Amino acid sequence: MRIHCLQHLKNDTLGSIGTWIDEKEYKLTKTLLYENSFFPAPEEFDLLLIMGGTMSIYQEEEYSWLKPEKEFVSKVIEAGKPVLGSCFGAQMISEVLGGKVTKNPYKEIGWHTVRSIEENIEQSPSELKDSKLPSCMFPEFTGFMWHGDTFEIPAGAVKLFESEACPNQGFIYNGNVLGLQFHPEANRQWVRNLIRDSGHDLVSGKYIQSEKEILGQESFFDSSRNLAFSLMNWFEEKCGQEN
Image 1 (tube, rainbow, N blue to C red):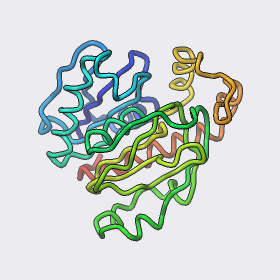
Image 2: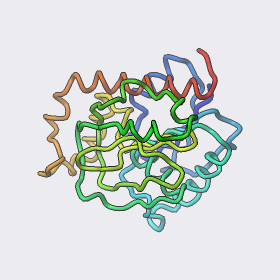
Image 3: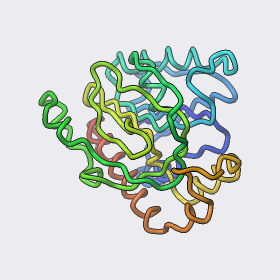
Image 4: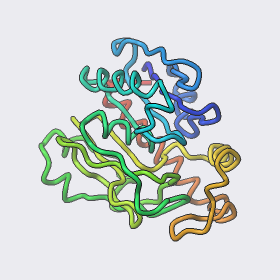
């Protein structure tokens, strides 16, 4: 399987998703947006990963690469390619599909419970019900968050997840485009990198955990790895690949 990644921060590794890719020995290419905005043709890869970022989707004047990146993502979705967007990546997918991205009432940082909206899937077209999303995502799980913005569920997409602080935690579009406000890639080193670069965000807040609280949750790191691997196995099936 050929995987292309849009990376927005130098230290934003792929975490557990990268471990999965390494173990499978799949081909990985990247566009490093902080260096350039060169994008491959959609037919050159099977799966697109859109990772997180400390910037906001609407800051096109500050980040000149945002507009061409959005055009590229739109082209990839139109081509019918499977796409996974994490946090900033999910916000980008939402905007590309016509949704709005705005400030969330609360900043949400740390490990938080995510609830699945199973009734939405049951009321969806048969192709979505047959998508068989990973069982570890139902009926609820713990996801790692680090965001201040939130996305609308775009027209034609189905809301999948919510949390107490942020009603829109995830959606699926066309059966193979998944936008997740949380970070399935979060492993211990990935989180340490984020704390090192953005630790100034760890202020007092209703949904903001301390560094000690975040790093002390060993079981959550284990379940996050399971989530990342389950998601990538799901996308592997979508791409019709076998190891």
